Amino acid sequence: MSRKPTTLEEWKSTLLAAVGMVVASFLAWFVLSRLSEATAGDTIGTFASVGLVLWVVSQSWFYMTQVKSPRRLLFLMGISFIQVVPFLFAAVYGAFGYTDNCVFGAQRPADVLYFSYVTFTTVGYGDMSPTGLCRALAAAEAVTGYILLGMFVAAAVALYSRNHGHN
Image (cartoon, rainbow, N blue to C red; front, side, top):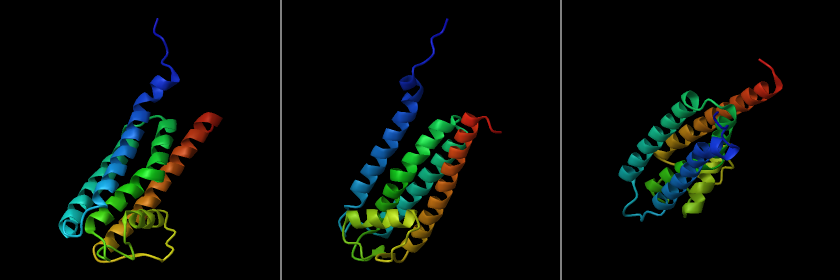
């Protein structure tokens, strides 16, 4: 007779994945947004951008094909929506450098993080604006925000439907 796993056991891999995403995105932002002006620039920024694209594509594939539980999908999407994706985009903005190389008006790491959240949520206050290559990156961040929000809503509807017996 097999014993049913406890709730913590069921969620263990999901919680570990969420913690891993949060830690990795925070470290990426912390390191890349603090590069010196001599180190930061188009080369580092381009490599960071490619890494970001690969991460977003792989995570989207993982969410859509590997996570079968709507509750787990909703949880992981929530973590991504709130913290991971904006921190990773802020890391890439920081990798391009300051003094208006990427985000006009950004002077420190907190500024690019703020700009990233404003862009990701498509609020767009207008106090900072992307320049150069970062314009395309900001547009990609806004589109990513739309897509991720759509996936989050779909997961919430699936969970609601399952819990309330709707097909």
